[in-house]
Length: 208
Image 1 (cartoon, rainbow, N blue to C red):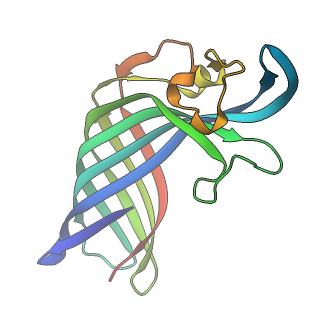
Image 2 (tube, one colour):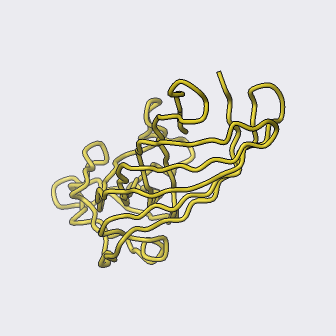
């Protein structure tokens, strides 16, 4: 999503862009058990179905300057961008039971969330595009831009797809209402590299 404002005419416009991307998503089902004891005697056991969801995402915000040809019908343009991107990997644990007996209406069955890794990098670059006028002040926009990104630590979809989530020291003292991020752990080493990115987009643009 972006918004641009003209500087006197529609040829030179300034504004900002915000974007969000998921570049990896995978899930696995886990089953835990909790013992009900009297003294040292186990008298019953509760089976706890869980779903563990790993998500890799990128959030970005950029200042944007665009120069657009003052033509009718088809309008080519060039642009420059400068800002930042936040690259993160998070794990969410959900109640997977049919009745959702741990769920609450505000959080869609989510028991706990944990950000395993997050890194913020500078991001800048340029691009070009073509706007095709569909009707008055509505354009079909074919756009491509290239962003140079700083060095970052991150996981990719192949990494999180191989993760085995392990729960830490959950025994008869396990309390589902008090599960927190310290109760589970993951394995694997993150990658480290520059974060250059080529984006190709097909968009609808509206002029107000």
